[in-house]
Length: 390
Image 1 (cartoon, rainbow, N blue to C red):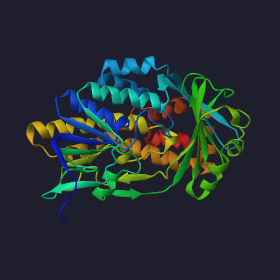
Image 2 (tube, rainbow, N blue to C red):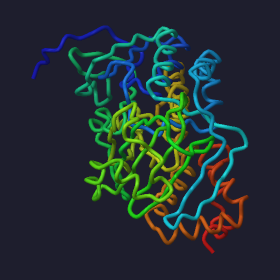
Image 3 (tube, one colour):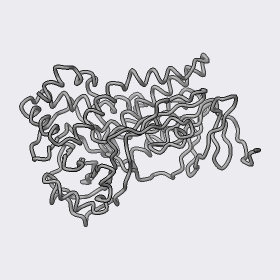
Image 4 (cartoon, rainbow, N blue to C red):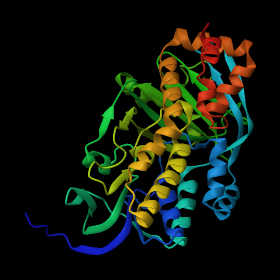
C-alpha cells in the first residue's frame, strides 16, 4: 500500500524521545557534526513521574556532555544528597553514605537543560510530533513515520517505558516483580534533609527526597495488583510509620502522576536488521528503588553515540552497542533485580537492614554501588552477599 505521508529530507540520525537519554544522545551526535533530528510527542517543559535523583556518577557524565551542561544543572538550584536511608517494615533503619554527593532536581528543569543543549549543538528539535511506525528498507530500519515520513541512516529509540520504537522492533519483554509508582511534589515536608529515603512497607515502599526550593518529591510504589491504593495517595503514605504525618496534602505543588508497570526490558537493544537502537528506559526500565534510571540514560547515551559515530566513520555494525551495554550494565541489572526481590520480601529486607546496621561499611558499599560510585560487582561478591543475609 502506498503511503500518503510526505517524505522529509534525509538525516544522519533521528532520535525519538527528548528525555535525558534522547537529548544526551542527540547532543553528542550533534557536537560531532552529525545531522540530527530530535522528535518528542510532548512539548517542553513537561512533567514526568520520576525519582528525580541523579546518582553521584551522573555528575561526571554531565561534565563529559559539556561543562556548560553541568554548570546549567548547578545553576538550577538542585538539592544535594549525601546518602540514602533505608527503613524496614519494622521501623529499623540504616544509612549509607556516598563518598561525595548527588544532585536532585525537577525533571521540568533537568530535561529542559539537556534539550536546550542539544538544540545549541545544531540538533533540530521538533516537539508535539508523535512517531507511529518505523520505516524499513531492505530489512533495515531507515526512518520513522509520524505526520510525515522522516528518513535517516540510524533511528534511536529513546521514547521511554512505553517506547513505540521498541515495540515496533518487536523486542519488549516483561518480568516480575511488576510495580507501579505514584509520585507528587510536596512543599514543607517534615524531617527531610540531605538524605534520600526508602521506606519499605507491606506492601510496597515509599521513596522521598528533596529536589530544591523546599520541595520534596515523594513516590508511592506498589505491586501492580495493589495499584488501586494509589487513588488514596496521602492516606497510603500515612500507612508507613516513618512517613506518617510528614506531608500536608494541602501543600502539593505538583499533582500526583502515575507510571508503570516496570520490569520491562528489551532483549535486542539493536534492531535485528540494523538501522536502529534503543537507549534509556526504552531499552530497560530499572526499578526506582535503586535510582539507576537517569544515570543509565546518560551513560547509555554515551555508548549509543559512540557506536553510531563509529558506524558512520567505518561502516561498523551497531551490534557493538549491544556488547558495550552488557559490559557496562550487566552488574547493575543483577544488583537491581536482587534488590527488587528483597524489597518485596519483608523478612529478607528486615534481615538485610539488620546486618547493615551492624556493618556500616556494607551499608556504604551498597549505597555507593547503586549510586554508581563503585562498580556493581563490588557488592556482588560472595563475601558481601553473605554478610548481608547470614
